[in-house]
Amino acid sequence: MTIGSHLEELYGLPVFTFPGREEPTRLPEPEAVAWRLAAGTYDGEGNWVETFGRFCAEVDTTRVRALVVGLWEDAYDSGPTDVIEALVAARDRLPALRAVFLGDIVFEECEISWINQTDVTPLLAGFPALEEFGVRGGQGLAFPAMRHDALRKLVVETGGLPVEVVRGVAASELPALEHLDLWLGTSWYGADSEVTDLEPILSGARLPRLRHLALRNSEIQDEIAAAVAAAPVVARLEVLDLSMGTLGDDGATALLGGQPLTHLKKLDLHHNYLSEALRQRIRETLGPVGVEVDLDRDDADWDEDDDGTVHRYVSVGE
Image (cartoon, rainbow, N blue to C red; front, top):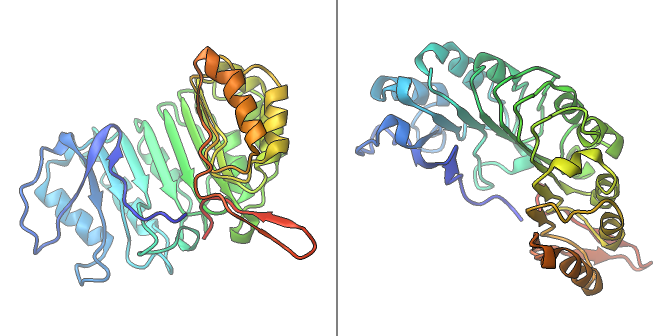
C-alpha cells in the first residue's frame, strides 16, 4: 500500500488547503479548519516559507488551531528545518495552535521512505501547549528524549523507523499522552529497533494516561505481539493496534495466550497473515464480550522462494 491521499482531518477539524496566489477562494473562519500549507514546487508557486508568510498576511493566525504541513520544496533532497524554524519564529502569532502534522506528502510527491526529515523536537518545545503532533517520513528523523506536558497524541508514520527515534520517544516524559501511534516499518527502509527498545512503553512505567497504543506496520509484528501479551501497559488500554505488519499465527497465538484482552474497546489487526482458524479463535474469544476486532486481511501479500522460505511484507514500506 502507498499513501495516495492527503489528510482530510486533524484535531477534529476538516483540512482546508490554503490556496495559491492564482486561486481566488473564499477563506473559512481561521478556527474552523485545519489549514494545509504546501509549497507549489512543481507549479512555480514558491517555497513553503513563502507560502507561510502569505498565509500569515491573509489569515488571522491568532485563531488558528491546527496546521498541516504539506510538501516543502523537494522533500527528496531536503528536510523541513526551514519550516520548523519559520513556525517557531511565528509562535507568538499562533497562540491558539494545538495540532501540527509535519509531512502530509503523498507518493506522487515523494514516497514515504524518501521523505527527508529532521529533529522535530524543537517544534514541540516551541509550542508547549500543543496537544497533537504527527510526522511522516523516517529518513533523517530525530526525536531525542524530551518533556512535553500538554501533548495528548503522537503519531510517527514511516516505512522504517530508526531505533534512536523509538528510544527517544520511549524515554520522553509525556504525562498527558493518551494516543501513541508508531509505524515501525521494515529494515529495507531503515527500521532497526528490537522489542526490547519498546520496553519503557510496554512496562507501563511511563505514559500514565495512555489509552490508545499502536505499534504497527512492523516486520517483527509477531515478536511485538508476544511482548504485548504480557505487557503491563495493556491493562489500561482501550485500543490496541498491531495492524499493517507481518502478524501471523505465532504472534496471534501468543496474544491470545497472554493476559485477557476483554477490557479493550478495539483490537486492530488488519493487514495480517493469519489462518482462518486463528481468525475464528479471536472472534470467538473477543466478539461475545463486545470487543471490536478488525481482522481484515487487507492487501497483505507474500512471496515464497523455491526452498519454501516465505517473505511477508508490511503495509507501507517505500
